[in-house]
Amino acid sequence: MHDKRKALDIIEFVQMLKAVDDFYGQPFQLLDWQYQVLWDVYGTVKGDGYRQYRYAYLEIPKKNGKTSLVAAIALYHLLCDGPGGQIYCCAADRGQAELVYKAASGMIEQEPEFEGILKVLDSRKEIKNKQTGTILKVLSAEAYTKHGLNPSVVIFDELHAQPNRDLWDVMTFGAGAARKEPLWWVITTAGDDPDRKSIGWEIHEMARRIADGEITDPTWYVKIYSAPEDADIFDEDVWHKANPSLGHTINIEAVRQEALAARNSESAERLFRWLRLNQWVSLKSIGWLPLTLWDATVGDWTPADLVGKSCYIGLDLSSTTDLTGECLLFPPQEGLDGWRAIFEAWIPEDSMKERVKRDKVPYDRWVKQKFLHATPGNVVDYEFVEARILAQSKQYNVIEVDTDPWNSRMLTQRLMKNGIEVVEIKQDIAHMSPAMKEIERLAKTGQLTHEANPVARWCWGNVTVAVDGNGNIKPMKNKSIGKIDLMVAMINAMARAMLLNQNKIDVSRYASGDFLDKLWS
Image (cartoon, rainbow, N blue to C red; front, side):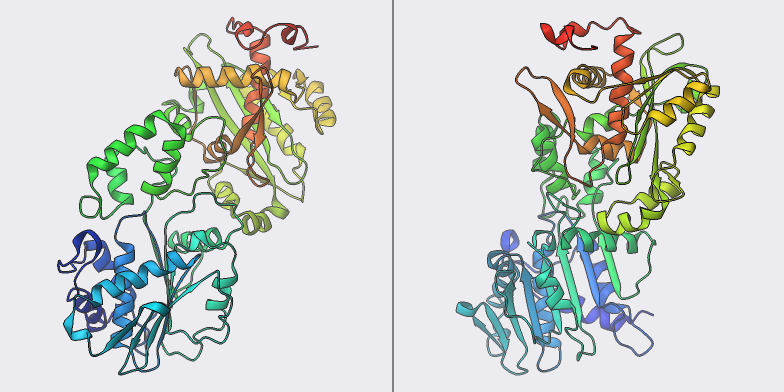
């Protein structure tokens, strides 16, 4: 149900305040998205008339006015709630936690009517309602004396920056149990280096699943403003969708300049994705190739267009923790003026649900979308891989299967019994560097395109490189849960395509000296 009066109470209160920061002294005019958030959170009620939502999750890029909004919300509860309320502004460090407090203080100093009611204790970073005893306090993860609190409202600012889950657990587990309408606001941007084990990522992923309808929790309100991973990051419509305050609190010309820098620098692109498009990216590891290159090389063809064409099948076999990855790599040939790549992947069914929860990676969603295949048991069943390759050999002209030696012997024997040539590719820098550099060259020159596949895209973004003294490279995972199997499969396929001179590739441009003498020994 919706109670219009309850929603308008806070909306009208906020719009009586004065703004701070760049709009200091001007009336606080709620933007459409801010109005909608307040309308939903405070107007949605249960049958008993109390608010339905206990948690309000707002994830939005920087500079969209979230701090001013929650400062106004904090003042509303400070002035309009019943006696004895406890409002806490929580953040990773005291400086961040004080931002909401400072914005609230700036609004108070512009309103003479608050003078006799609210007392600002700047030395303690505390605001007190002298009539009701309700207080607003600043808490940070640096202080550990938080047990025994009875919050009526908790504001978590930049949850992604929390160093651990201690503050979150203390402020949510059992907290507010004695309150009729406790409310937790989570106001955050995306994280810059998600390790997929942080509290910020955990809550983000839970909120995303609620928003997508994958799980149901009527106590959570979720609003996430971000650009999809596969979006064109240079499309201004994408900017507006991710930044609902663009043109108001954010200057679009400044964003255009940031986008220009992002086109020319991988590090600038990562910052642009993180700060402007609210994507969870890593700033702390240097990848092999940027995701923008992946996105730019999605082909305008379908796998059906490749039926009957010659291809190399690259495999990267798994044990229990990795994916088993496959890449079908089609070199230029009659009817194809460039390279094409399509992908398959397998995962053990028994461990998938546990890994989704542990790693916070949407394997289950990818299975439903048929980009990933789940095989029965707790290891990938290679019979399913074999059956798929045999089926593919009837669709395409498979020149050979190129696989890493790991766990490949039995599968190799069975495939060869069915007339399919199998070659093992050593997983060392000598065999992988020329192939990686050729893939990079072909992608950057537009000669290699691939299907749109979120599993492959994820693997592409997870690849970092090890470099030797001669500039030769080898793929490495950026973290334990960051799988790269589909990219290794593509590298294996390219290694043999180059060697067999399918496209008259001169491998001398990738290495020199005795390196080439030892390349395929």
